[in-house]
Length: 98
Image (cartoon, rainbow, N blue to C red; front, top):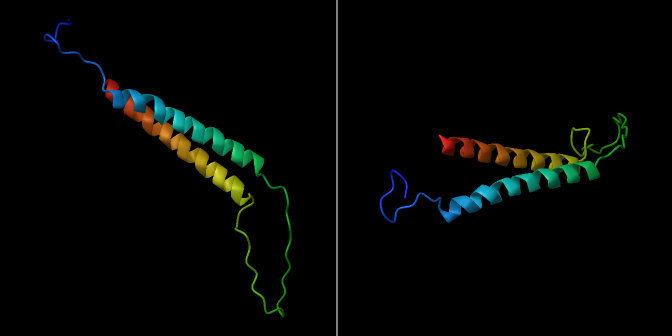
């Protein structure tokens, strides 16, 4: 028995806290790794050109105004979400200690 515990009282964390203390950082780390793999494997090095064509009655619509492919953008977005999840978990862990 500890100094502040009565008979039969224990200060053990609840099972849900123990599970979330392991699952949340693993999910965040997994999201970072998957996002980096997707971003690395979908890099595009193709650069094209287009010309001004005033007499054609067609409207030019590009695939986006970025120099990276949509797969790379998706991978980087997943990586950022994983890093945000890890930062949120770290903030909760530091806050619980105090």
